[in-house]
Every structure is written in structure tokens, then in C-alpha cells.
Length: 474
Image (cartoon, rainbow, N blue to C red; front, side, top):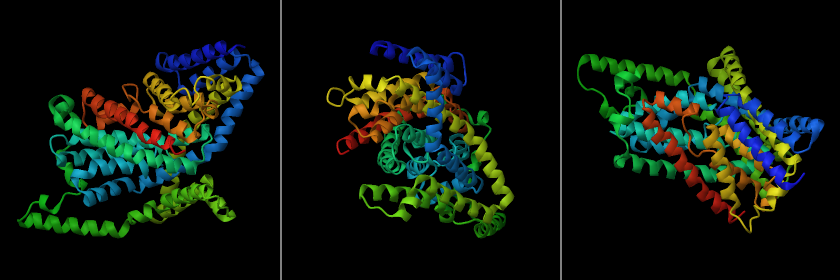
């Protein structure tokens, strides 16, 4: 079959996937498999070859990242039930103060908390952000909503073990330790700069509280809840026997809770150890240092398994075994859709590779004649605008680009990061994250378009700065 026919059939398959998801509301899992089957049959693989490509691609990506996704989500489920997120945000508020909390919260969410399933992380952290918002003044809601949106979405695609990052690394055959290191190099400055830019824009007249925020009576929240986020001593009432008694009672309760709850370092130590082991393996590989023990312990599956076992032990100590089992059951239910989506992304990538699209596009996307990373970003951005899901667009873009990566003359980690950056562009009305942020932060749809859609799009563009800078040295 001619190159032109393969290109046309590939374009038809991608458009069909988007139409099936957006117009006919077909489940993305089914749409991606149907698109892969059409491409294989139309491009001449035949029935047997198409089925082999679909099933082999699914199995290969599951072997690469299946256990990693499961272990990460299970760790996150236990940390959620240990109140790790609430306590971490309270600690950040005390350490950095209200003025810097948007940046601190965004960086923390985008890095250390990515083992927690996105919707769960959002539902837990949004009320905390909303409680902090009044202490930031007139634009508190705007600043906290933007920081939350940027941190959540960037973490998915740039930080291991974020589900998008795992899928991108697996589909493009990037070692997870390498992705972890370079992902952090990209995500930290991206989140800080994007949050700063949006804070400046929103506080210079673009945010209109009367139009962009829901009235208090429409949100079902009590502004007095702010006291749960760690009010400073100066904010507390003084004088009066009742107040004093209340203060003594609160202090007693806090001391009692401190005795029964583990220190934050204990909660997050297993996850931090796991990530450090993965990073150690990456550094050892760069230094060309080989040690059997280090190689074994730093392999991502073993490292995250160690993290999961450690988190289970912490949970068992402070929650009891029945509660840990309940948390693990919840985590398994959450991981099912993520695993299937990642698997069918591998199926699509295998079909695209089998029909020879990589060799064809390699003729036109060489590093000497094009800016290939910008093309990668654009493909992922267009897919996200059409589909509306960061994870689905990142996986689809990676599946499309995986066979092409060797032909670009670039390190695959750069292609993966560029696809991740593009998949962040224009989070909009078809995204579940959009509507959760709208309702949980008390924003109107107009306000959410500013904080979520524009905020994450700014981060998508800014992320290409460090990615292009890395391309100069890799």
C-alpha cells in the first residue's frame, strides 16, 4: 500500500476515534480498539495481523506499566485514608504562610501526591484550598483554583507515578527513572511560572468575583470553615471564659490527635523511598555503574512494591488491617479503567507500528528540517481539544508517535514530555476535572474557564521551554 494511503487511513482512524468519543459518547476504550482495528484492516494487515497487533500491543504495555499503575494507585488509596493530604496542606500553610500557599500547594500536588487517583486527590484537596482562599483576599478563590488545576493536570503527565506519565514512558520505551528525573526538571519550573503568571493576570482585573464566583448561599459552604485550615494565633478570639475554655479544649484535642496520628515523614516515607530508589537506578545507569543489588532494588516494579508494602505497614499500624484492606479494595476499583486505557493505547501504537507509519513520517519530521517537538506538542494539543481528556489524549498521542520517535533523531523522553505538554492544552467542558473544580471551588463556568482552561493552557505552553532547553543537551 502506498504511503499516501497509509497516511489517509491513519487520519481517518484518529478522526473516527474522536467522533466516536465526542459525538456518539462511546467509551474511549471501545473507540480506541475500533480505531486500531479499522487502521489494521484498511492498511492491509489482514484480519489475523490486525488482531495480533491489537492483542500484542495491549499485552506489551501491560507488562511494562500494569503493575506500576496498580501499585501507585493502591499506595494513594491508603494515603488518602490516612488523611495524608489534609495534614500535608495544613503543614504547608503553617510553614510557607498564606501568601505562598498557592505555589507550595501546586508544586506539592504535581510532584509528591501523584500516586493518588486524580478525582480522589481533587475531591480531598479542593475543600482545603477553598478554606484557605478567604485568607488570600479578594482573589483567593481564583489563585487557589488555578494552582489546584495546574498542579493536578501537570502532575498527571510529567511526574512518575502519574498515570499519564507512566503511559507515555511505557509507550515510548523511556526508562522510568529517566522520565522521573527529566519530568521533575520540567514540572517544577512549569508549575511555579504558570501559577505566578496566572496570579498576576487574575489579580490585575481579569477576575471578577461577582461574575466568576458563585454566591456563598449557592455553594452550600460555611465561610467559618476557614478555621480548619490552620488559622494563625492572631486570628483567634481573645478574652472571655468560654473562649479560653474552648481554646484549652481545642489544644487538648490537638495533642491527643498528635499522639495517635503518625508524623508526616512516616506517612510519606515509603513513597519517597520508592522514588529515590528509581532515581538511584537512573543515576547509576547514567554513571555506567552496575551493582546487582542496586539494579534489583531500583527497578521500578520492585521500588514501588517496596513503597506499597511500607505504606501498608504504616496503614496497618495506624488504621488497622480491616481499614487497609478496604483502602486496597477501593484502589483496585480505581485502577481498572486506567489500566485498560493504557492497554488500548498500546494496542493502537502496535497497529500504527505494524502498518509502517513511523518510517513514513520519519521522512518528513527529521530533526534537520522540522521542529519535531513542536509538531509532537501540536498533535497532542489537537487531540486534547477534540477529546477533552488529558489522559486519553496523552495516551493516543503517544500511541501515534511511538513508532515515529526513533526517526526524529531525538531522545524518546523528549518526545514523551512534549506529548504530555501538548495534552494539557485547553482543558474544557468535556473534562470531569473542569466540572469538579467548578463545583468544589465555588466558581461559575465563566470563572472555571479562566482558572482551569486558561491556567492549564498557560502551563502547557510554558512547559515547552524547559523541554526545548533539554533538547539542546540530550
